[in-house]
Amino acid sequence: MKQLKTPLFVSLVLTSVLAFNSCKKDKDEEPTSTTTTTPPYTACAPATVYTPPSGTSPKLIFQFKFDSTQVRLDNIGNPSTVPAGNAAQSPIFNFMSQHYIELAGDLDLVGAGEVLHIGQQTTAGGLTAIDYCASVQTAENATFFSIPIDSINPGSYKWLRVSLAYQNYTISYKSTSVPGGFGTGTIASFIGFRTYITGYQMNGVSYNPTAATGGQGNHNQGYWGFQTNVAGTNYFIDGQSAGTTVPNPLFATSPIPAGSCLVTGQFVDNTLVNSPLVITGLETADIVITVSLSTNKSFEWVDSTPDGYFEPSIGEAVVDMGIRGLIPIKN
Image (cartoon, rainbow, N blue to C red):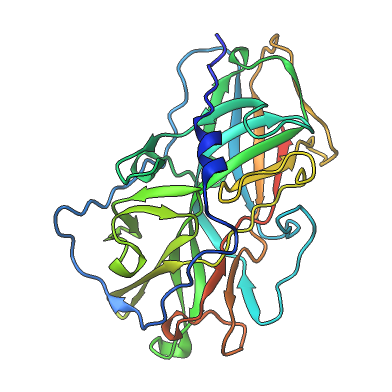
């Protein structure tokens, strides 16, 4: 039987007051050594393996691909470059989680298409937010969602919308404290419309949001944490990015609510030719969709030195962590 749709997610993002360029900048301070966990702090470890629904009927299956060579788009789906005064790099992605999946046509407003999935939410922090601890974080080429095809309304679907929620990736940075002057660290990037965070882990080490960023509880789109290890000592800072790019080529006919991170892309076949996803209800085999995400210079900061290197130790401000495009490929 077809799943019931719910307007909850749509109403949440429509009433969000977060604008793409209205977030606080990250704090300007030296990284400080982390402390051990103390109650009632909880650093959850979300699942990294998705559990598909039971049954043997054919399924529509979604998997991520992270592509640093894919075209870099702006909010309205046009090719973009890094603004003067900023610098950017293409991170190495480790995990991604999503919160919302919808199949849509050219004129379908958010929620008016075929809503396949809305992730778990909570009001523990006050306003309704994504429940980070209940999310599933998947790596490249791993299934992040599947649904029996016979539960989807038959039709021809031109566009895919995916609301991305959490990114975990490796970046390079510059610091005089690091032997040789350069090192690598991990970014925990929360890009969902709002996320309830009691704590999180990077590389097996537990962290919680600092008091300067609001502490435990709800965090608006753009909160991030950075972790690195230098000579056996863990260092951690966190902050709030100044914006999140969310490419939407349907901006003129089907705008997305600010803060939703609903990235939109047109279905293509495996030769990358535009081709709608057709669901007949008579399918006898699985359909696999590769959700190819552009990570092309997706981590961006104000290059205040300027030298093209991210320098967290001098407080260079993170300005964007948004995915730079989505191409859903039918396999």
